[in-house]
Length: 74
Ligand SMILES: [Zn+2]
Image: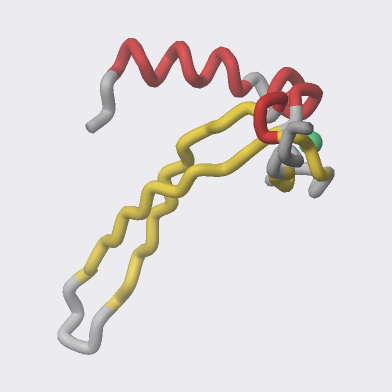
């Protein structure tokens, strides 16, 4: 008997999908913080988010992934 497949939550619609069927997308979140000294401090955080297949298609995640592979942002 196999173990249960871990469920992940779709970042877009909140649906629970099995991990093997979910699309992993690396999201870069930027925080702009203004300090009291007046200088801007920027934080970047890479976060892995999951999308269900339909959301991935709908929000063109697949195309974004291709684009990112071309550009190599980091
Ligand atoms: Zn979804």
